[in-house]
Image (cartoon, rainbow, N blue to C red; front, side, top):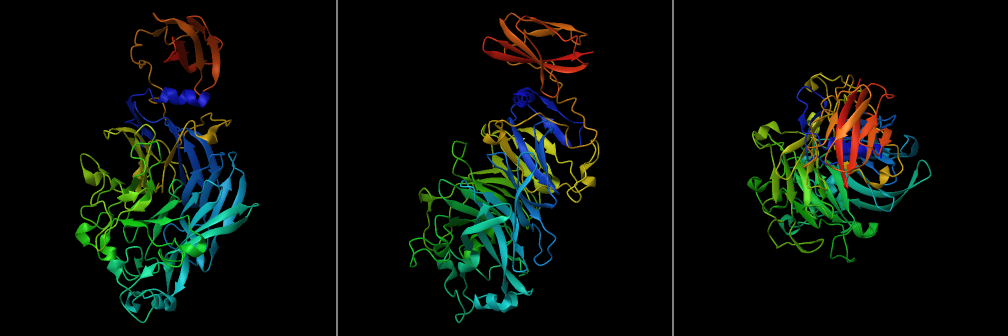
Length: 544
């Protein structure tokens, strides 16, 4: 109750925090009421729109960058182990579950000299966990698979793997499903090796010799995201290095997932759809390329604006000038989950349905790595500009109604002080997810807001909505204000009751009259909820 109150108060604000350098810098009317989850170093935070901490979880492992809040209130996160066997940006190695109170309840290591979890994980509806990992292929294996030896610049090549595990106990898991990209390769380099065929006629397979201008190192694909769609039972994957997204079938068995569609099984693990860089399967040129190091593609959920389409953050690396975009792509389909394709053409659409860039100066919006975008229930879009640790929310007409700068040093977990220049310390963030206040995880939980993350915070503007009222309620006034004790509510409306809450969201007084006694309360700011004729009017009063 107290937390919902605070959000009702916050969404009425129409202020800009011009003096704040970190934390919440802007909050305007129309911001979506919800709690934002993000992780930095070994800490994960759930914050309200003012940047006050609703909950915090700490791990002994630095962030493996992916984190999710589960419907039961638990936290699922990836952690970065100290392993030096397989190393590249986004490395992880351990998957953890914490309960709401911060207790570690499950810890599973997917980290050996031959394989390592990295970047993303995903909580499945049945309680299982999808894990994105790489496994080693020796150069001999890579050559046998059709890789041109001249395109091997390191001692091995990484296969990208998605494995689904069923957690058990406190540190065990049973693998129940697996998919490997090495089972879905094509090459036209050496007819004496495996996977030889016509690249342009096999869009469901990945050309092992297409490097998209990269060096040919072990980490040639750099998958950076896996997201699951329950309705279609499909997984959407992002390859940063090849600048493509792929969709694969999850309804297969592990054996089927290792085969091609149309083989001895009715189902297979080849790509059902791909988009972003048709040059990769010889169906376009560099001029046809749409994606540049993208992150976090996902299917927009049912019931939301643009449901069923794919939203993603297009980082914009490897193009001139450098700028980022949020794209919405509507895959062409013959039926739900069945993607249209004509031989010797590129998958559609030719252009995204929607593109967001900075409306004034596109180059002012740029994140070289990391980042995400999320469609919210009110039609707004939450954007994580990851390299800059900046979260901002835009309305359908692209007005920015919320802006937050992460105050955590992502190299050591230290909190910065309000007023510090965020460019003076690293404060990157992989992804930000906003959860509605009625998300099941919050049922029965203590949602009393704590202090903001930053040291020496300044929330004065966040609470400065004294003269802001709901439409048609400007005739309701509170006096005297400031007060030393009693206040009167002057209104032509019929008052049902008045509730007074302190800054922590605790209800301290209630009355059914048109005056309220605050004389026994400590000096400070109080919020009055005036219930009248099925409406709630919010006023702020200062006691001194």
